[in-house]
Image (cartoon, rainbow, N blue to C red; front, side, top):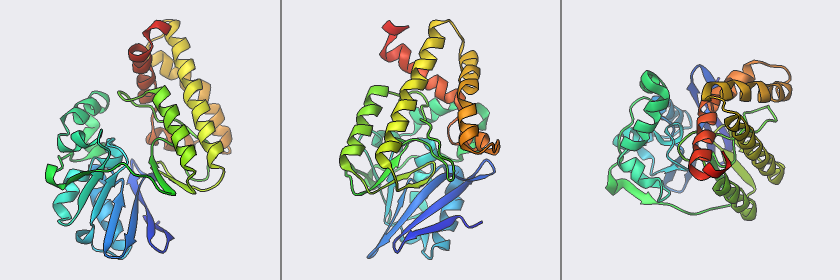
Length: 284
């Protein structure tokens, strides 16, 4: 199976093999004039996959001019510092809030290490810093919106949307505001990192995501009020939600594993629990 799918005359979608699965983590390649841009270059463990995919699309990785990170989670931008060493002409573009974490990856690595432990290298590979002089602040929007995680997780062929809510950055109110912003921009296409293009019923997609974001939050809050532990809440959320996903997947149990690879239940619960404790302790 090819890792590269051409979307239009100047755009390609790249699938990175991750934990034995394709079409879970992806990048986008855009070409125009003398410029070549990679959006969400992926984790350090996918560097060789990305380089090979750029070549498969007919380009030389050394000709990449832009590396653009929608946000600085390791699955979207962890390989950036490694890639700039192999792409001498590439400049890196990221939102102002993410920029410090590409220049100094220590906090991102420390946070992820608490979750993944000795699996860090296997999952994410090398996580190197990006030189300050190669970094630029980016905060613009267009009709084709590369949404990162803000538009949720929706894997190909499965009509099921799931909110990725890892700690420490979950803020339900801010996320809901971001959904409103995306709707106001009225994009023609949403390109999501997990995985692919959403071209139809975009307002419905976003509202379904918002509903799930809040309903899962209420579920975790209720369990916390009942004195349940993190492992207990994780088990409860799985039992509460997996039947819906399994139905959407036509009974294909492999879909459960693929969604878990894209955004797992343990991190989901950890994100919500931290949110309630930090943002709304009065509700506990």
